[in-house]
Amino acid sequence: MAAPLPGDSAPSVAALDGSAGLFEAIYTTRALRRFRPDPIPQDVLFQILDAAIRAPSGQNAQDWRFLIVTEAPVKLALQEWALEGWARYSLRYAEDPAQIDALPRSQRLSLRSVEHLSHHLSEAPAIVLVCGMHGRHSTPGGSSYPAVQNLLLAARALGIGGSIFNLPLGHADELKQMLDIPENNDIYCVLPLGYPTDTIGPVLRKPVQKVVYWEKFGQAWEFAAQQPAQGWEERWIE
Ligand SMILES: Cc1cc2nc3c(=O)[nH]c(=O)nc-3n(C[C@H](O)[C@H](O)[C@H](O)COP(=O)(O)O)c2cc1C
Image (cartoon, rainbow, N blue to C red; front, side, top):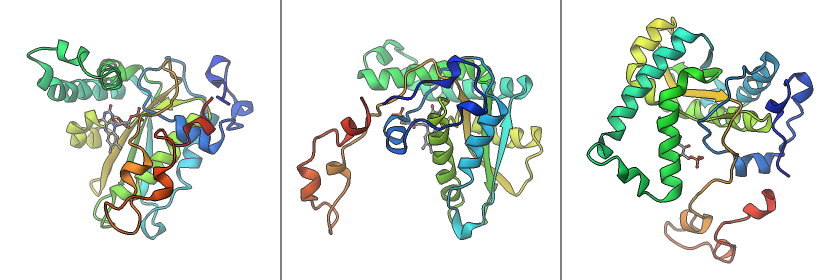
């Protein structure tokens, strides 16, 4: 059952029931990049971050730090840098922007939503920067991303949308300076969050039978081969 979006009424502690079940949230959490300007209440943000920090990290070091940005000047700087990132990325379509319209639907919609967020990042009510100490583990990014996914799933359960949106990180050094992020930290991820105006899931993914092998790389998993091409999506999405 799709959970109602609490953004339709003023959310409060009462909305923190996480009414999307785990599998429903997993199967419907997609990158949402268009938001209403409504602020996210502090209790909702707390629940999302409190779920994020339940994630595993190398040696349980929890060297992650999460910076919640809501102030206009910082969000505007992030938007300017995102636009630069978008301009670099979209160069491949510069000669003929209509090429984007010729892409398969899901690709086209996804690109248009990246373009939209690049132009409207400052309107996202909250942007979470996920930082971590660099060089602390062999895979410092790997110690942040489980928390990022926890965060996105918790957000989904509470009717909040978001997406990893690293386009502004071409200016990571300036961003670090602006926000007093210490030299020994890196920014691994930029996460705009808000009440989405786009609809939730399902997500388009290569099926299990294409990406999971049995015993030897490349060897089919017979059980998976007998399952529907879209997997068990129908169990979790109406
Ligand atoms: C490491 C990483 C970096 C990403 N960077 C960006 C980014 O800079 N801009 C963006 O719009 N999406 C970014 N994404 C989001 C992916 O594009 C998105 O999750 C993927 O296309 C699947 O989208 P869907 O869940 O809506 O199907 C990033 C995702 C990951 C895991």
